[in-house]
Image (cartoon, rainbow, N blue to C red; front, side, top):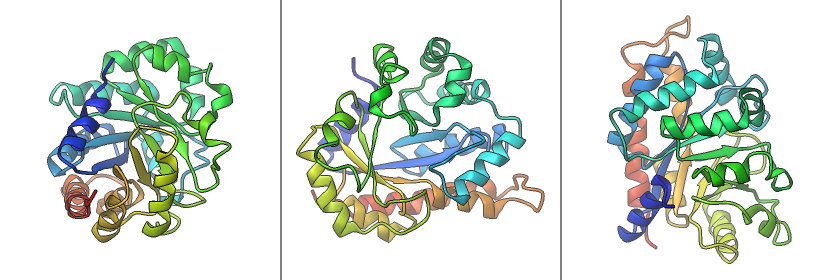
Length: 276
């Protein structure tokens, strides 16, 4: 079965272009504004959209995305409401791939079988669950694949050649390479080191390799796009959103455009940097 993610990367390969993958937190700063941001991202150049599922204990996230999750939770965002936002997004966009990213606990509480049915019905294409290792594939990964969803795995600088086959065994859609050791938004990605890492991963898989963590500027996005099949930006977009809020962390007239304008600049960087 071909998912929207598979179709998008196949099309980008034909265009000889790297993907621009955006991350935003669902419900930040509120559900309606979050939806308007999602609607604006494809027009700003986003090829794939990752949507954060807010969680109280986001161990892999840096301060910016932790704060975004807390704003979303304060606004009343739940997993059910996150799926509702995806469904509302799908009412006007049936082609842009949507990936839910987060932690297993909210899905476990929701119920895996129910979640997979509801996620498919809402229009979700893939999952990135950062705290489920390959040893736990029976929990969610295998059921998700059987339900027609891509299950996207993270590889890191510390994932050696011995570990990679296990990480890649049931991965689909794309591989998300974490370019730095540590939490999101904590350091800058080194494009030269990324090039070697992407080449090493590609010796083990035919899947596209997207690179995230530590990419904040169009120049950095261009540099990474020269080595990878996709460039993922999250913390920088979340920071742009935060800077647009009023003192009570409410949306302003600038919030949607602040995110969309930065996304457009980053997308231009990704497009300028491709020389496969």
